[in-house]
Amino acid sequence: METEKTDIVIAGTGASGLFAALHLPRDKRVLMITKDEVENSDSFLAQGGICVLHDKDDYDSFMEDTLKAGHYENRRESVDIIIRSSRPVINELIGYGVDFARKADGSLDYTREGCHSRPRILFHEDITGKEITSKLLAQVKQLSNVTLLEYTTMTDILVENEECKGILV
Image (cartoon, rainbow, N blue to C red; front, top):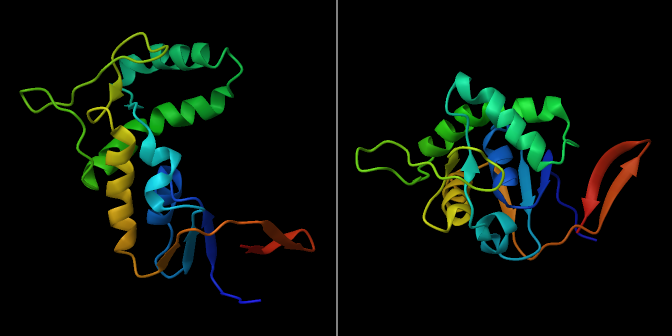
């Protein structure tokens, strides 16, 4: 059995895995695995947009829309975190080069989707997932501490004394 030592393993190379890798300390060795090609993640293939809080006056409406969409089974604290962090995350994505649709005056263009009662969805044509994921992937590929392995499937988590010691791929 071949062994590779690493500090952190991220199973999946979708938007959340890539975003996580960009926020890890650079002195940690990170291994990212994906069972297929990186471009075949659900995130890469997603068509819809990403919702964002316009301003503090939008908070209550955004919360209600999100709770309604989740049939009021959502964890309110989690929804709060998502709503309040949406603008900083969008700003970070734009900083990574994500090209959201813009109006003629250069301001961000919002659309309405799902249960949202007002336009608060940012998008890029009908390939928002590809736009976000490809830009995040380009950033991750520049990190010398991250190794990406395609066609690698995690089959088990190795636990010893209730502590994760590694994975089998």
